Length: 152
Image (cartoon, rainbow, N blue to C red; front, side, top):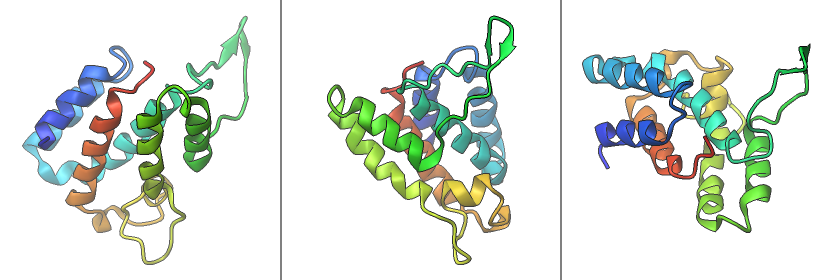
């Protein structure tokens, strides 16, 4: 699958109202300005987390119940992947196998990182100039592979 096909695959399975318009903008921006990967990486990691969450009991996110604000802490990162694995191991072993591969995106940031993981990007640990276009494209291809399993 090439990168344009990957964007199309993501949009095919993304939540129509919440994510498809933004993925269209991301696709168009990346097509016009390939160096935009440093701006698009945090967006892609945010989407990856919600995509994984959509396959768990923590989806959909609820912030209000009968008008009252709900402040329940949700799982993120490796804890979210562990929840998705636990809740899907019986019904979707292919998805669970892929989730195991995705753990590489969630290793703890170190001073020698080049921004090729969620923690370095999401927490601003490594400056965007150290992120690579190759790592962005790998992330997009992995999201595309995962997309058919979404719970949106």
